[in-house]
Length: 383
Ligand code: AQP
Image: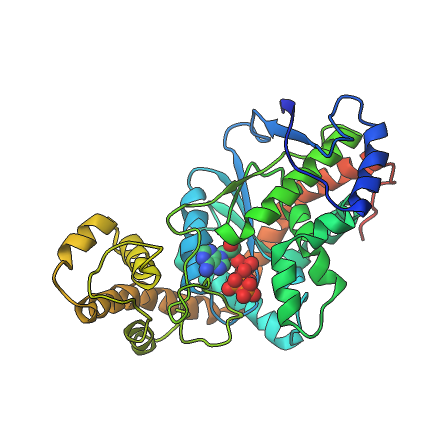
């Protein structure tokens, strides 16, 4: 049974489009605090699924390889949580066309993404992994949520502002990206969403949308929580430590790809920007470059930052970087090898993804059917 609790929050509605929209909603919501710019905060006290709590997360197939930021920020949690949660993971190819793309490349990158995810340790017996475009409920729910999202509310998303300033072609899809992301998660009644720090604002939006929909139509969606690992929530670019490691960076010099060759990894780490002084100490404000390298080292080697600081006391950046390069290269090499093995048999890989999509569809269809009847739609007719 799903128990829901209503409490006010401070989510302010600043834009006039939003305020108009909220006034309409408020009339049908006597039990919630609206009108003063507050929205209801609904938290689940029981998991949607008896037994294991559910997690959902997605990743875009927008490059040939995932990078260390993706891995340390999110994918590592995906692997861990498949053993403790009812885990549903998605390669979000619908999101990938919000920026320019090449159709053949996208098709191939979905397979490369799946191969890498299995290679880092996702197990189809332990979790559900599927490609978003194979489960049609995602855009269907997204439309419904778009019709409950304030224009100004969507416009405040910093990722949209950032990406729209970098791309010449700014689409409506890029604007509504976080609403599709909300649909992705809400379809599965997920309790937790393992992501990097950059996704915190999007999770907040999806929580607001779930609360708003529930308050308007009755309990329909579990309100999810972000699962962000503090230490690795943002992995910085090695060449520009003030920026997050990102596929869309202007140069690849500061990005460690999981599929990079060992020599390439060594070269990138050797050239990583360090800071003034010679001490290897963790100090994000004054030594962002070294602190980032220490985080990577500590997480991959399973050693505490304090132990690493002691080990490298009195030694220079050269020794530290040399050892770190070997740690990273040793970590990535077997992933690249296993990825290639999966890619050697794309028929089997496609079969695994189709099975994942069937499992995902069974959950998504149930949530969508419920949401459809709540808003007064007829049930969808498939096939
Ligand atoms: N630098 C990072 N540190 C920690 N976590 C990160 N994530 C991404 N970059 C970092 C997390 O990886 C997951 C997948 O993200 P995505 O599919 O949205 O990939 P992305 O955001 O497109 O990755 P990029 O590299 O940042 O691409 P661009 O440049 O296109 O935006 C998410 O959980 C994300 O938080």
